[in-house]
Amino acid sequence: MIAFVSGPVAALAPTSAVIEVGGVGMLVHCTPATLARLRTGEQARLATSLVVREDSLTLYGFADDDERLVFELLQTASGVGPRLAQAMLGVHSPDALRTAFATGDEKALTAVPGIGKRGAQKLLLELKDKLGAPLGTGGLVGAQRAASGPAPWTEQLSAALIGLGYAAREAEDAVDAVSPQAEAAIAETGSAPVPQLLRAALQTLNRAR
Image (cartoon, rainbow, N blue to C red):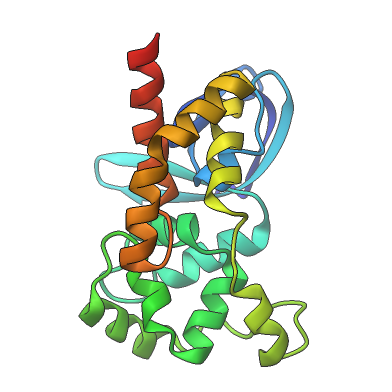
């Protein structure tokens, strides 16, 4: 297993990064929040999980070992593959997911693209005791504070666009352009789907150029 990769960031894309390791470019699939921390040409270290299929080897990257652990634990539930597990981490932080399972928060799970009400109920049953308690929160009361999850979607999206090489002004304009889409999603599901918003923002920027 490849436990981590470390090296300069050779390239960034909306859903992945290329890390140069010993002269070899390693394609690593990451959440927008993880990608937002990376900058082309700068050193990076990502915890990784290698998913082996008959026809592919896919490397998933994470900001830290805890995020990777949750990614792997999520996949112990039936019907949860690496893409859905990564989508869950794209919407919620590891501790926010622990809180959701500990409190039976169905709404938090249905905020993830690809998870409906019945799927959320099934996941709550299967994973309730597997992820453990939120870390560093001093119990369930403190865990409620962790439920806010990642930074606001505007910050995540702006940082991801700047990480992809866009100017701060361009990122700000793109965030403004997709705000109606984000607000509609928040009204419907309670959260903004950052991966989808990133794709929409990139389309907006491409049309502007």
